[in-house]
Length: 159
Image 1: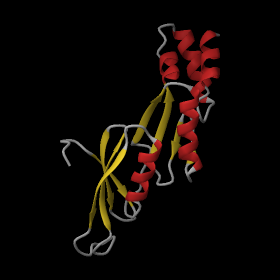
Image 2: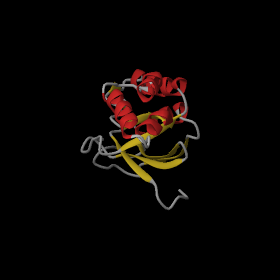
Image 3: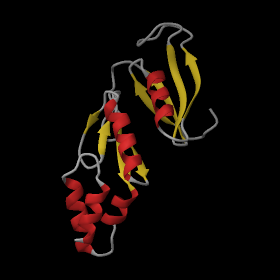
């Protein structure tokens, strides 16, 4: 591992599966070193996958198969800026369609419980509009959505 700061994500024996999914789904993502346990440990046996180094969109991560003691929560999420509806749809469908679940305002969870914000750049520009009325309309439109619909956001922005 060469990065000075790496995000460590806790899994219950599924770190390698998660890393492979992320590498297949997101650009600039890959699976790196897989370390197997040199001995038995509370969540596994000697030879089980202990850690997996991987990157998600260039961000270095370490998947730790630590067992069932801790679960992911919405307090941590990856926010993915998308450029258009096709990219938004592709990523949302990949996550939700692979055993994940939908949430609100562009949020969803993968099947491992990790939260993702699939956030079109158009949404961020709309809610940051210098005209408070425009920003409010876009924000209110977003509040009623699961997956973000850029056309609806742009319509709200126009009034």
